[in-house]
Length: 282
Ligand SMILES: C[S@@+](CC[C@H](N)C(=O)[O-])C[C@H]1O[C@@H](n2cnc3c(N)ncnc32)[C@H](O)[C@@H]1O
Image (cartoon, rainbow, N blue to C red; front, top):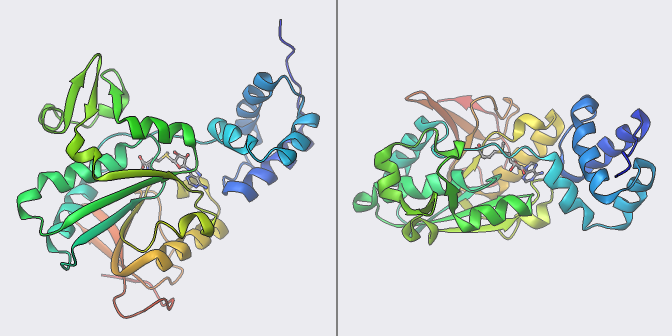
C-alpha cells in the first residue's frame, strides 16, 4: 500500500510561486486545481510536499517531470479553421525570399504545426517558396508524440478533420493515422520555455508565429513579456496568430490588428525595426 502524501496551503502557495517563476503558469489563485496535479507527482516520488520543494530546488531535471503534470495540452487538427484559411492567403502573397519560417510556439502534441504544414501543402502549386515549421513546447513528453506524428483513430484530435483531409494528409497505420512524410519533413520540434529568451533566440527570426490557447494561462505581466519576445523575433511585416480568447491587450506593441473572414490576427509594422509603437485596428 502507498502512503498518501499530504500537502498544506502554505506549501502549495510556495510551489505555485516557483511554478509561476519557472514557466508563467499562474496557479496562485487556483490552488485547488494545482493540488491534484502536484499530488500525482508526489505519489510517484513518495515524497511529502515539505521534502518536495527542496528536492525541486536541488534537481533542475525535476522541472521537466513536474511540467508534464501541470501543463494542459488539449489540442486538435485545424483548430479555429478560419485562421488556417487566412494563413493560406498569407502564404500565397508573402513577399518572395526563398523560405517562409513559421513557429508554432506552444505546439503540444503537434496538431497545430502539422495543420500549418497541411495548409501549405494544400496550396502547393501556387506557393512560390518553401515553408519551414518549428514546433516548440515546454513539455518534452508532448514533443515526443509530436515528433512521431502518429495519432490513434479514436483520438479527439480528429474532431475537426474531414475524411478528405485524412485521405490527403495521413497514412493509415494500425488503429490510427500517421502524418504523411511530405508534411513531417517540413516540421521540426524543439523544447523551448516561452519565458526564457535564451531558449527562444535559436528559433528566430521568423515570419509567422502561432501561439494559441496558452496565453490564457498567464497573467498580464507575463503576456507583456511574451508578446515583446514575439515582436523582437518576428520579421518586419510578419504575422502573429493568437487563440480566439487571447489578445495582445492593446498595450502598444507595434502590431496592426487584422480582422478578416471570422479570423483575427496581428501584423508587425514594416518600418518599426524593433521599436515598440501603438496598436491599431486594420
Ligand atoms: C492548450 S495547449 C495549446 C496547443 C495548441 N497551441 C493549440 O492551440 O491547439 C497549451 C500548450 O502550452 C504549453 N506551455 C505552457 N506553458 C509554456 C511555456 N512557459 N513555454 C512553452 N510552452 C508552454 C503546454 O505544455 C501546452 O502544450
